[in-house]
Image (cartoon, rainbow, N blue to C red; front, side, top):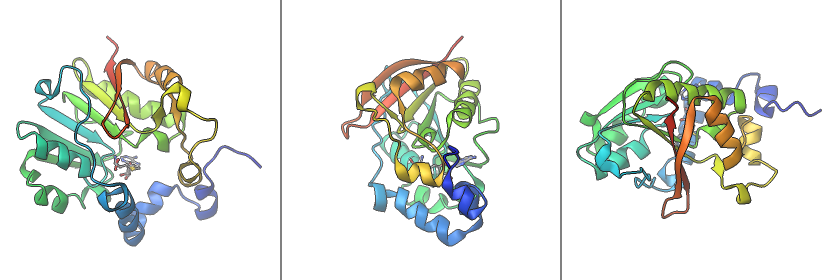
Length: 219
Ligand SMILES: C[S@@+](CC[C@H](N)C(=O)[O-])C[C@H]1O[C@@H](n2cnc3c(N)ncnc32)[C@H](O)[C@@H]1O
């Protein structure tokens, strides 16, 4: 029977992310999969209109163990960062941030991104987060970002959105089975963002080809 619900929950009786929090070994191997040994060193050249000169504070929402934030801050000594992820994930960021030499510029916050986020930063990053969730949850995360960024902050979305012409009908099978999320076309994302109180300001590609979408809270 097709329910649209993630099969992981059906088989293991709790959502993938909760199971990860409960099992340190499983969490560590998933962390290795999405960290540099699995996905490569994250590209700190996140496109920002007007350039990074306009950014002094960045919040990585669902930022995992801090690999992207570490690379961004390593490249930009004048920027300070906040890492937001579930408590047991954030607790594993300490060594990564220390080795990168940026730990003193990072505040690590163990919380859900469905709760109010640290407010007032210049830039909020959502990398490989929205594609893990169906529309209701993805919109709730975007709403939290919009609230926290208002009035002058921005949100950069990386991953989970494809240019309209590239977006095929079937989502990533792994994502669908594990967490129930889906890839969205740019047009679908625009609608979701608008409903969450965000307008798309710009979209461009990193040198790796990854699409970066910049949004601002609607006034
Ligand atoms: C696919 S990973 C992406 C991690 C990182 N942004 C990256 O690109 O490597 C999704 C992240 O969302 C986090 N996450 C899942 N549910 C969450 C929640 N309710 N609140 C905060 N973070 C959550 C997971 O712990 C995980 O680190």
